[in-house]
Length: 494
Image (cartoon, one colour):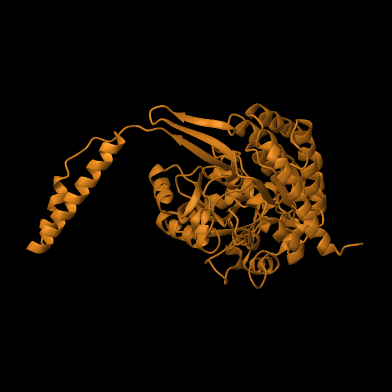
């Protein structure tokens, strides 16, 4: 009997979860040494196939560029491995002799991994490695536009894990992709947790599935340039971050907010780095092709270079252009390019001082980036402190390309392709997600003895303040009862 495509996809999702559950039961008994051996071979496989997977991703999705996707795959393999290698994720992971506490790691169970089209192979490598490091099996759901490259990345990771001794089925990936299959995967009773990276609607669906979920929010990242900044370096880093893989990382810069006193000089440096500033007519034309009328970025331009966007908009730009910059005077629907643009287009704002800059950055975050990230180019620590204390973001990235800094390439943040946005964005995690977010921790606690017994006399005075005689007598009786109960408990415990 031949099944319809939608039924095939549902059955495939169920079969993959069934196999993952069986693998999970075996994997949870592995030692730390066995787990680390698996991760090492997965790292090796990711590095060895970084270039091939990059080529597949660019060819299939038409997004980003080959060199940067190579780097993403390498980063998700080698850099991530170096960071998670020393982590204890099996057995007793911490002991506190003073408090007589043991902390014991346990896997959460089978994980559903949702993969975006913008990072279709590097995210697979990353999620597979953090899942198996924490002894969890994982089943991936690819984006429909990246099925082949995502499946190939999953196969490579699975093959390497099996070669290192992992159980068959420990890494799975849906081939017959459908929304029904993704929903089936997220809601399957044998799936314990969802690791969701993708569009807002999909992340919301993950949180609505009834399962614990770790998801992300949009990143409308402002880059504030303050007068104390090294302007040449700021321009270099902003263009580097925005153009990395053609703007497909959610932490990439979306708008420059520059103090008026340094704005003209900054523009000179930005142009030297390949920025092309649009005139008012060109801003309108680019807005019409980059953003949709009903809101959101046009999928046709996601991860595209400036030449493609310029041709689509019907404008002429210099051949060496790396990024299009649109001067804007406000935030919101009247200025479509003030929203998140996962492509090579930046907004540009002038502000009188850092106070106005602070307000402008907040406005940009409010329309679609609350909780995510903010970049600052500044050498005044007091101003950095003001931003850090007042801005609703979980990553304040100072004097670094935001795209690379946010994921942990150029900063001390954990290497990650799932950047939590906290409760401001409806996310359950505010950090860069690591294997430590994919474990349950059991605690063994010993009796420490009793705290020093203190006089209960103050309890007798509860009813004496501003109370009438009857209330005072009642409070005294209650205090005596409490004292007798505590005395009996103390005697029993001793």
